[in-house]
Length: 134
Image (cartoon, rainbow, N blue to C red; front, side):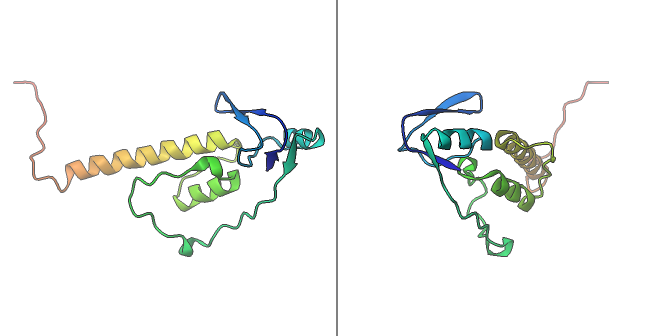
């Protein structure tokens, strides 16, 4: 993880270029690129304590639609999040954006299943299906 200390750096992220400067938060990029920027004196390495609390100490979100800010998480933290949610991430998925896309897709499918299940159960309205007359 690095922090820009001089000038502005264009970080490629999700098909866009995001400007990073000395006022920006630290970020991760390719290790070779991080080393190059540090060697040029444009950035400095930032040590981050990536202690992930034990699962039993993680509080449950108060509401179901709590959004997670994956941008501030490392790939390791995102993989841990997926593991907690029983979302399988293939080992071939190494980019943060790819892993987040898999998680978002899995959570979207889960939400759809919940919505469909709630509509079929717990609803006092009859389930009417259209049919062609005989």
